[in-house]
Length: 279
Image (cartoon, rainbow, N blue to C red; front, side):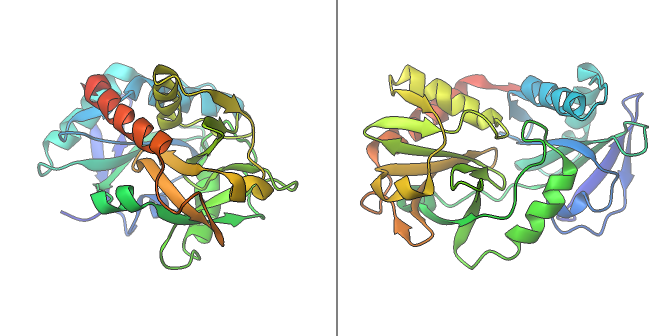
């Protein structure tokens, strides 16, 4: 199969395969009308995590932009399931987008084979960098226009860098291009509580932290605090909980994933096993 496949999902639930030259899910959004989107992954080919929340996020994002949108859950689930059943047995990364540009509110579904991050990366952690000249115009809305801006930055990242963190003009860390950011300070979990896109994986991580009795502080971490952070990690649909051991030139903690991060990783994996559902 091609690396990237794209379908239009009609109001009837029928699907039409659309020709595309895109090489990534982000490039797909250069070929379809602007709007809102959500991205999720499959488990055991046809299982997903919190799909209902993804539909809700589409509707909320559209509302923030001044559009009324109602996702027909039954038809969308059926369409996604039938598409997956016709594909090879593996897991996929899926992007569901809604056209808000033409007024037709068409749904587009793009997918690519999921490329799991090697287990050794989760054990060793990754390097990320800071950027200071990109912000979401509407932080709570997941818009395709932001994807296009973020994709430009992503293609300019140095080799070996997994993600870029956006900061506000005062040096407060907001979130990554496609992730949420967490730090551990004095054993407490610190993450931005506003001015960000509150990812679905982020919410599950906060749930894990609560169940593990890790105190949560909702505030921005300032770049000047990074040297005193004991641990850091980022979260997203495709990454899960990914430890961060270096931000720019700053080594985090002892340069290895710490105990709080590892505990949350383990508990998050347990939540996945419990909360995944058939589409």
